[in-house]
Image (tube, rainbow, N blue to C red):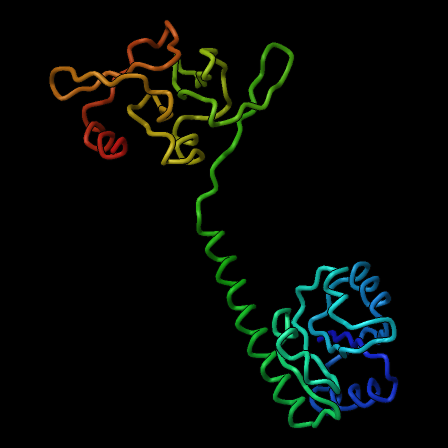
Length: 250
């Protein structure tokens, strides 16, 4: 575990280092800094340590000024001879507030508190990572070819995906169609199911592209788009998907 000590009194810093080594020999003190300026510069230029021990009164001011000059997300254990800053300390990243001279048992208790905090934070980040991997990734854009040129098309601007003469196309919200190198089965897996619905074997529709829904005989629905294409003006929800389509629209 990497530890940063911000302390302007050398004897106090050396004592703290000895106590830390006695508690856990794996702790590595990456630096000892005695001023607000040096601490702020170090934090801006180096990877964040796992834990910071911070005195209140430093060579050029009080340590709270460091938080105003550098982004600090690392937990902090304050070690100071002054007890009037306790409330202010716990408004920042404070794990504990130890009064000098620091007693070994108090330091041990503070380290134990940090370890509990660190373990909870690690577990939370691990859970977040698992959830993000489980959530489906939706495709935000498709690459299309226009003549000799390529263009990235935002998925939200696509009215529908459709099959015509065994090829897959997109129809944009400007009424333009372009071929894409995906099957409808694959596209159905890539797009947001809250925004797109596969109404038949040949069509996947964008919710916002639907201008009108017309009830037909035999439990069929006909769809009219905001910007239709003559070649696909007759868009119908297949009979077996009508119930699911109504539920999706609702």
